[in-house]
Image (cartoon, rainbow, N blue to C red):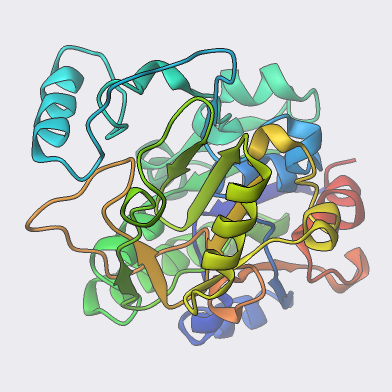
Length: 344
């Protein structure tokens, strides 16, 4: 019986399939688009590998508000003192991103990354207990030196990094993707395997910066008013005042860079839990927020982004497998319809 090879490539975009579609065709596999859910890699990985939407995984994006806590004075995330203090803090092992000073205790990091290690993966699911697991440098070494002796998962994250900081149209990006597929191709030709390859999302190309500081329109955050968390592409707002909620909703709906998720959309993508935000605003493919609660800087350089609206094709990932696995173009159904069949 053939051994199974599962290859995950972070941020491999369907929009740039010309870089690898010939190799996949040579493997006699079908190449298909894979529309992600909302959220970043943490949510996408739990969706793809466990079939869990945010409501089921019990988190949406990497940080959530601690509603029982309160605050008084704070310095906005746009303040240089906040930025420099948080940087110094991180040097001493205290990581509160660029969350406003005075509000660090208001938010908790809760994102779960199943592919961060084999130990983490096995703690979350029994599906891969007997699989070999190699990530990044170890995965490259395995491709170059090893024969496959048992079902194996390979994880490659560097494509995501290059997409962010070099751009998907750069020579470095194109060369790296092609080199990766060349190595996988050699390995596949050396080993008689059943292969399934997939990615979690795509990557935008040279998005425009959006500055959104709610305090400038609605005044300071407060316990009785509103609180918010803003990261690269998603704004989450918690509001205690219904009149204020209506005003913020109206303001955000007027913004052309993104959209407020309505109840129908939140239900369809498993983001009903109000702990995820009374209001969720997500940018379209061509934009990213800066400054945000992860930082800002004079020399900031973002040439690609993900976590944007999944309805934009630039955000779509891919999967490639034997045609007998069936059809699927939506990450919400990938685990049940494709991955579960492959690993059984």
